[in-house]
Length: 312
Image 1 (cartoon, helix red, strand yellow):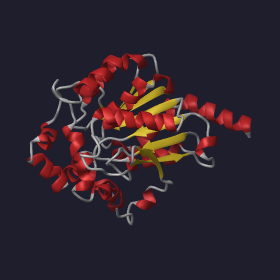
Image 2 (spheres, rainbow, N blue to C red; image 1 turned 120 degrees about the vertical axis):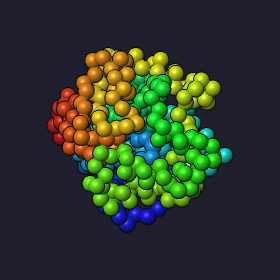
Image 3 (cartoon, one colour; image 1 turned 90 degrees about the vertical axis):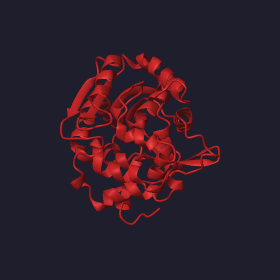
């Protein structure tokens, strides 16, 4: 994996968790402290497809002086191991198991989940299994429920043979996302583009990208359908928790319909509609997203500062 262009944008120490012989990469950042000594307020950042923890780099830098910032790479993504389909299931259930394992192994509590794209359903899957560990939700252009709003541009990636050749062979999913998932593709520097492209530089390294597309459960017979229904049915567990919904309104995939559906589950959620942002809202308007999260976490920020003062 080439590091020459993007590495300076991702100045974090790499850590790894063994998951049955496969290494999950994650970063665990809190400025000035070892994570084991950090205050227990945690920002857990869960990415989607075809991104990785690089997507959250600016949030980590912004908040690591006040929070423990943990951002993982799903197996097959980013700097994590990239096993074959015979070695690893690449199903929603497995992804949730992996995240639950990370939460328990790192002893994470008082978690604010920050999730995007596939990170929403995986993150909420873990949250609904370990509700005692999760206190707040920040959900961005994602879903955690059934929907028939599945765009044609994604559906073509599921066409047998053609979809695999398109995604794993020609790398069109990752490359197209850099043009169509952002409202301002012209603003992406060569360094940023290299960061998104670098982990997915071969057929074998793009297995997860293809399998995420294939694992969207549109019909009851799909292997992940039952898992999705279980998550959807347990979303009301968080109805009385603080929730922030931050939405890039130019997203053609997770459109405002998904935002409206989340509001049915979380009617008291605060909402931030970013008119000039697309699916990659952290690239299109990072300052607006960061400020929205800053205000949402204001109570946590004061707690963290008070705790630091008391121990200092």
